[in-house]
Image (cartoon, protein in one colour):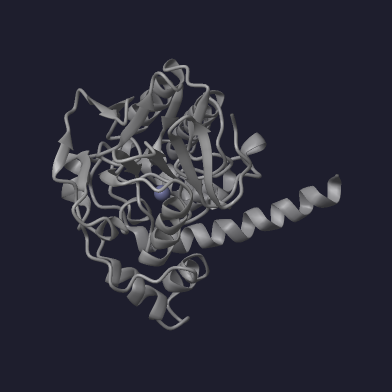
Length: 326
Ligand SMILES: [Zn+2]
């Protein structure tokens, strides 16, 4: 069963729910809930306390579970910065997820929001961050670790397999597979109708992670961002990553800069994906791999955001031109 992409809680099967946040762009992630009684488990919290509270209120109103466990699919704030609202819950994630959770303090995003418009990186991010309030967040990392070879849990009689698939989108990526229900919660290993952005990981591992999702043959896939989909979506994003990597490799050989390459790559069927300018981050990852740099070396986020903003403008102009043609 595929729910419509509307905000809020939707039931996927007996005892399995998802909470969706359209449009799935920056910071608007999806979560999962398993169990409806005294033994419930939440998959991911949200980017700030208000968004997480809104979800927990709706869950309490409609499902009335006792959430004793939380799984964080990875360390990005839009998947864990509401953890503190479940005091006493066991927080589960990969060791690298726990280690990286403090790498970006919420206050730094709040400061970015408060910077004057004359700072280009701030201007680029401002619009996307406007709806979030990063004050009062206390980082609450996992204390129970998903081993590299995964672990199985029983949640209110539902089998849940937590599979480590990093370093793909980040070093600590975990996906949640419910084999009996035929459902996978992918975290940000999968973005749907939205260009992916990656941090500490490799193309090879990310492509393998997407193929692993497809190999599980789920009927229902809840991406980290975007509408609920099927396993074909994982292969579609794999094809995007393969294509962008191959194009970046070709342009790297010509001496093109990251920005030049990002502007030159013809996005074809992917041109209408949300946040298409994130191709800058994929090209930069490809370039770092081609230079032989370690996968977890720090990324110049601010610098890439400025480039991405220029690429966004170019993509918007191209979309207008396409509109004229049709
Ligand atoms: Zn995310």
